[in-house]
Length: 287
Image (cartoon, rainbow, N blue to C red; front, side, top):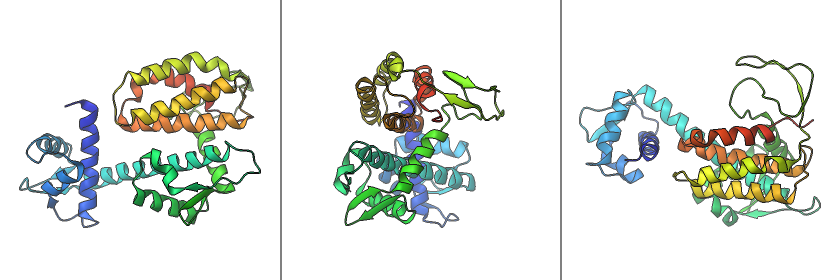
């Protein structure tokens, strides 16, 4: 079995067990039912997946027909579930943000539920996320129509500004930097970063990144290619854009959505040399 597919199935299996436990983590649940939820054969792939998870102390069983999450397994399943939910939430917000910025400021953008179909989020989950975002004041959601609020716009922009390409606690600078720079893990220093390089300068690395992603195989590849292709279109149509321009934030949003999909699929490392260059160019504080 393909390594990345098996990794994904292990994660889906843990989440399926979490849902079947329904909060009662002290009991076991039907293994056949868990397998059916993610579409694997009880007497086939399930054997290898369950044996791996038991070696990692994530599941346990007395009879293979009944299986239970360990405390470590419950924590891991919750982490996976929450990460996936957060990813879907971010994709919805990015979609609304990009729609808002695709028209003149005086035009009100309303998005109907069916217009999110390309995000491939189940309808009941989509509505749940939109309702939650509405309660938090980030989205206005009524009568199957959604619109991002001003708080939502600021939330998306802050998320992209604060994102670190490598997840470290230091900043790699590009362009002109005012003041000293202290680099290395665990070093924290405030610096003023000013990147006035034309956006067109990153185009060769962006093209190489898209080519690298096309060469890989993972479930959300089409979504990632679509986002990266849109980034390329925005770069080509705005060759002189700088971080102060709205299009810069739109590009950052799509890049981070694409990278998150590849992170979860476990394939981002294969294209990381190109990801590093592209992200370091875009994901920076706006002066």
